View (spheres, helix red, strand yellow):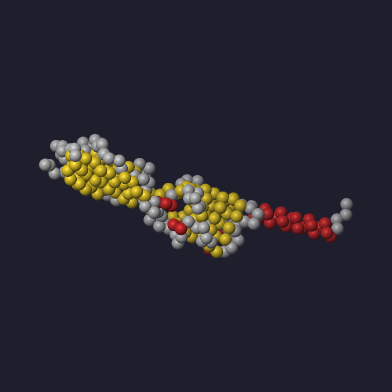
Length: 236
């Protein structure tokens, strides 16, 4: 079988295309354990390409899958694309551009807030190949020491109010008497602010006891944190 110049040229093109396609095939990798972030801190969400080929000519998307509008950050055509970026992430996210050439697409997230908790996807696309990786971010915020106010006489006893703010995840508030027994109280009121931090408050009516000491405790079991305040109610 004869091999002419045209046939050799086509074969060469196919080999070049195959080589180019193979060079673009990669895996997107990162840590398997969740990232635990303290509110107010800066964190890095690791994401990198294996083999260590350059991502400078690729599209890098970071998404928070817990948002309806998912985009946290986009790098494309050597620039940051801010259209469709979730507003709360603006001016708080960046890549390490000097490391893109070695396949490092990690995201730096500054001033962590409660709404940053969620499932993140690092999605990297080349001309003819793409891959992605997901990672969990959990946010911890320890709230303020509870503030207890004496509201005065109520039907059935003395009214007290306890309030604490700045928690994440959502905390639980309980009232205790001087012996550590839980008291029956009104329904808790919980508010979540625009940064995702929780304020909780609750009213209780207490009756006079020998000690007249009562404690408001705010606790969050997932982060194993609690704060409490004891108040003395004057006798009649």
